[in-house]
Picture 1: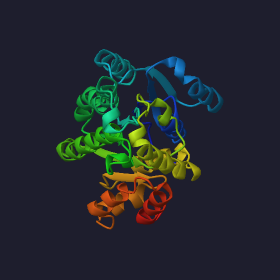
Picture 2: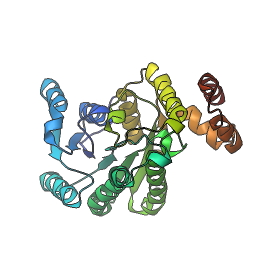
Picture 3: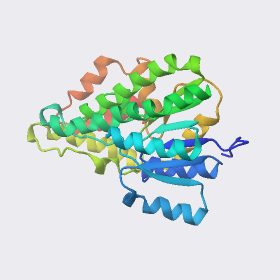
Picture 4: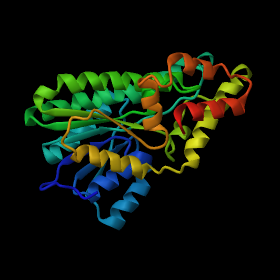
Length: 294
């Protein structure tokens, strides 16, 4: 999609070194945006730097850890010193957690909320005063279908994304009078490295079937081979579509699963009954796919 920009807008994207973040940074730079791609460590940005060199992109890497107050303040300070403006903030940095509730390590899984929820809060607090002064801005929150549906064996990850969705819906209301728009991107399963970023390792024979169905669900999505570029294209469309659409489901399973749960075609009762198929893995997969028309 070709950008409609007349003058470059400044975009800050967290987690810009891999997956959806890297793809979005590259896609927006190609479309004419001036991009600041942040990452916890610049050592992780080699693939992005290769793309910058090869394609001659206007992307600046910034070392920024969204879970650390001082790091966020320093990173945004550098950006504002260089540009004096922030037009778009894309809160993309995230980590996963695959553990049923009995296996949750609270100390470790607090890191999930530090990154997936408090990280966006920190970055919004850093960017918003500038946006309000400009009387314009766009905050894009990269959530997940897990922010609308409690997916198998992911209670903490789902909770962190539900919290992000609630925050975002509030911000969409509270910031509209300042000319600041809020959008939520809700990816389904994509071929990214987030499964490798999980802080918890499933190890509970009593819940082995629950873990199996989680992996089955992801394998169904992975086989669809949805690349992160599909999500980054949706983000570009979101930025350049002037309507007030809040939620943007994208990639495998997103739209059908979210709609089915929220229009009632898959009721709370049916969702619970699917979960009761503990010892019949094949039936669970077929029931899951049939319920959501996958």
